[in-house]
Length: 499
Ligand code: NDP
Image (tube, rainbow, N blue to C red; front, side, top):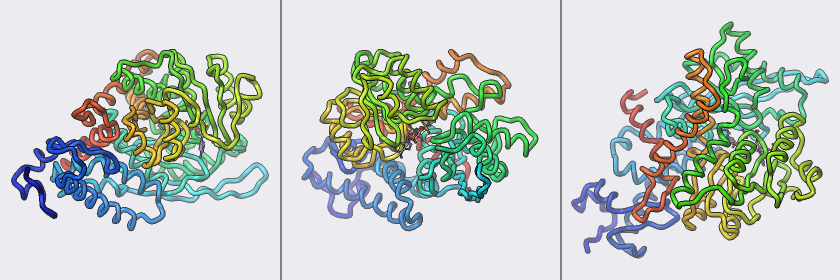
């Protein structure tokens, strides 16, 4: 057998990079590599390929870390993407020459501003506002606003970077952005939230517009906040446009938008299960979070015959062995959306449930996990517990809920695993549908929007299969989503020149 010497590329030994890579099936660096030439990991060819890719990734990441110090979530998100994209970039050197990855990791524009407001006691409060306009190659910037005390530049850059690929996967014409503030809506009165939103929008309105940048909700930004933000935009600009999505139904919102992310996660997971001849019926499901995404993931999974046994918030989780049925679900909605209470109260109300303070639900035995709370809520140890407890399908509702170490555990176990940028894209996709309805000045029915959302999730799944299916039939959804999302944006950037 021919062997590549140190420092020699496939080209130097007489085969094209494409053939070289087509003849090998890459998995993330930490895991296996199936090589049709020789599957022995001691094989010098295997080691050389891995060393070349690893060197490229390390060189790239060294520059990213030096240029963006202290932004650990951003480093994590970029590393996950670059690791799975690098073989594809090597195979398609035009993207390397044009420095597409470097350009995608640098926001087109970063806006940081002061948000002063007055609390109910007459005290002056100062928060920091952000908008990251990451990439507009395929459409106006689009992505949510997050109001949470943990918000900082690194968190929003990670979210904006992921958003670019996610929006591309939906096939709708939306670029990527993200914004928010370190403001904490918890414990604030409606009047305080309104004054904060008005101050935030007073600055943000200079930078957004229906053809420029269209924000939406995220953690801490729901219907109430979107209402106050929209009201202030309209007042300052004297125009009624689709500048925000997630609007109220009576003033330009779309049916199904509140449900879309949670429903979309379950639609996507159903497609994943179908690749193995399985479905939700009779399965036990773990959900984390109890906000917008979690609630509608619970509802749709239950409608499909599953038993959802957990929900959580930042204080702890509840385990209800009998499952969260429609009546209990209505209680959660009232608790969280109207009374803005804590999930602990669920266990006070229903004796079938237990509450676990300060814990996350990943030690519970089940079949499917839908993490729907926040980033890095599943670490390596949690991931091992999930696998040991029989979980065979994980679809992420939250953005980056699994650390890269946790992802390595899933991939080694070869379970069905979908990263958020694929499985939670239903929210932004339906925001895209809201934009279309606003432009047409029409409102589609619930059934129409739901059917379109369902089709989009099936389409994203097909894209992941196209780019992520391996020789043995296993689907690497991380690779599929990253390459599938990347190609459209990268090609648009190439077409539009060096801007
Ligand atoms: P919500 O604010 O409605 O709910 C967030 C939930 O997560 C709450 O239960 C909250 O608990 C919990 N949570 C937040 N921070 C933490 C933390 N540090 N530790 C533990 N739990 C926490 O937000 P969404 O449901 O809209 O968003 C949830 C996730 O889904 C986020 O990752 C978001 O980026 C992602 N996402 C949302 C989309 C959308 O359409 N809304 C679209 C795509 C992705 P508590 O009340 O105690 O803070």
